[in-house]
View 1 (cartoon, helix red, strand yellow):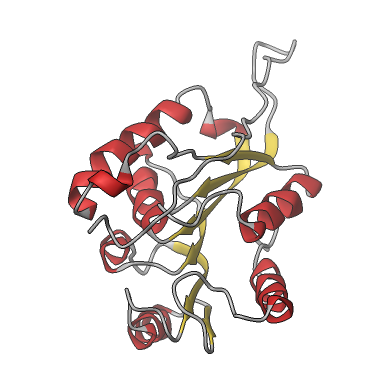
View 2 (view 1 turned 180 degrees about the horizontal axis):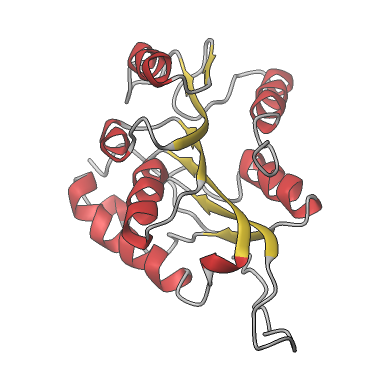
Length: 212
């Protein structure tokens, strides 16, 4: 059984623009912000919710980096522990040319397996992004502390990979915003497309700009 997922992340990767040095003392110009999207193995960056998030932040003047896992053979991998080195290397490779110090605001939107990767990457690079966690999985919580800057954690009350009540308890303990979507599972989708669109809008409203 391959991690319980069936699809891969196959999308046209959106790369942030590289920033030339300014003429003033060779100092790089400060950019407004950067959104980094960390997909799951089945919930790709082609999904409407990710695309809506990207469009929202791009409109605010942020650059967007969407991580691509399409080359990773998840169907042949039995455990998350086996998958993580491949996923981690993909993130390191795809972000190698990004100077995170150029950005005034850093936002990580992550889904499922990506919630692990986002937490790990922030620790690995010494970053302090604002996180929007979509359906966090248990291992992701090992990278979350009271000091983590959490915009919100979002989970369906039918999610088989994580008990939503555990997320509610964690968010209550550390005063993180928490959104529990009734009647949906790990993919955060309802059978009715209209309701799914409404769910996406509710989540999109959590995608704020620079921290107030």
